[in-house]
Image (tube, rainbow, N blue to C red; front, side, top):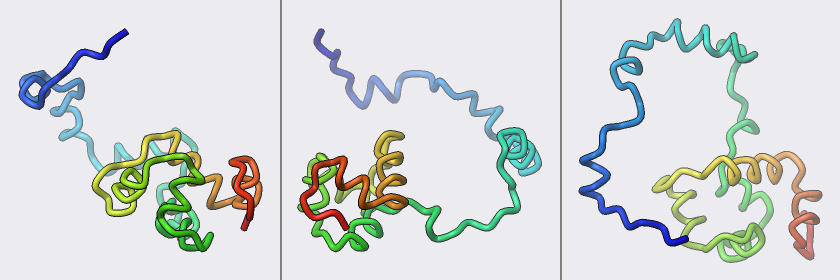
Length: 117
């Protein structure tokens, strides 16, 4: 099944799926309440190891951009876009980065990388 082509003008002409008025009306207390409801502590400090940075993980593994991109099976340009903040990682990529950050040897072994960190 072919994907329909959508131009930027088409996208800009569409109404957003998000209720922007509701987003604008959301207070900090609402956000804190939502965090508590979802099991998070809104006052917890963010630790460095909780930040999933592809560049940080790649450097910690001692890999070049090309090596890391090949290992995680993405184009080098995609990795560069993530590292430079031009495009966000999708949820599956964030999950992979979390696994690589927390269990690098197992993740690299599972990805078939020859020299696990």
